[in-house]
Amino acid sequence: MLSSLGGVEPSWLDLIDILIVAFLIYQLLQFIRGTHAVQMALGALVLVLLYWLSQLLHLETVNWLLRTFMPYLVFGIIVVFQAEIRKVLAQLGKTPLPGVFGSPRTEEVIDEVVLAATTLAAQHTGAIVVIERDMGLRSYIETGIALDAYVTYDLLISIFNPGTPLHDGAVIIQGNRVAAAACFLPLTVNPQLSRELGSRHRAAIGVTEDTDALAVVVSEETGVISLVVGGRIRRGLEAASLKAALLEALEIHQSSEPAAAPSTSGLPAREK
Image 1 (cartoon, rainbow, N blue to C red):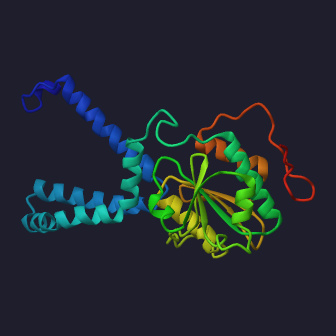
Image 2 (cartoon, rainbow, N blue to C red; image 1 turned 90 degrees about the horizontal axis):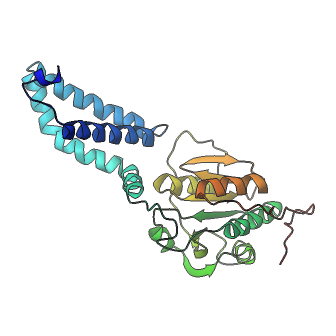
Image 3 (cartoon, one colour; image 1 turned 30 degrees about the horizontal axis):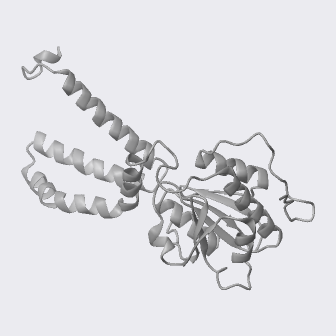
């Protein structure tokens, strides 16, 4: 039956070609699902279908208009979807071997972040910690003060102390090191967010919309700990749930030894 279509005998290469295109389209739809890019993608699809119908039905005027504006549409799609395109390219370049490029993240690093977050939450001290994954955060790091220091509880507490000049901004972690502090992040422009979310939370959402990074946020007003991944925010996390979520998102295997839990005074128990 397939051989009768146009008198051309399909080959295995044709089948592979179709499967690759179908896979790429499926992955693209999975990637933009649940984001504001869905509506834009549907609009572009409507224009493509309209162009195809104008050729099929010989609608010369409509076809001419679409052919004239199609190049501008392509550039428009690149501009509108630049963040999504960056993420797709980053996923294509993702190495299956963690730690091949840069320093590997460890469970000890996560423990330091969790302990610092719970302490800051108990003190109602605002904080935002961004953890780099596959997409580089160099452009954001350059907006802050370079540190290049090991991630430790004491360092994070010192940075976010309201009396220090580095507290107003984000800490960015690369691998097992604090790359910079007092970094500026882009605020999200999502109009559907609650008005209760302040600039610190909007900055965390913004950077995770533009990159694949994670962001841990401590609210200065409520002392609530939040985790932001892919522009989605989870609020009201405790030490255990925050650590579990970070380990899962960063694909770090959890050791069998339980982590130190926060003490009743609101400060995490810490052993040397």
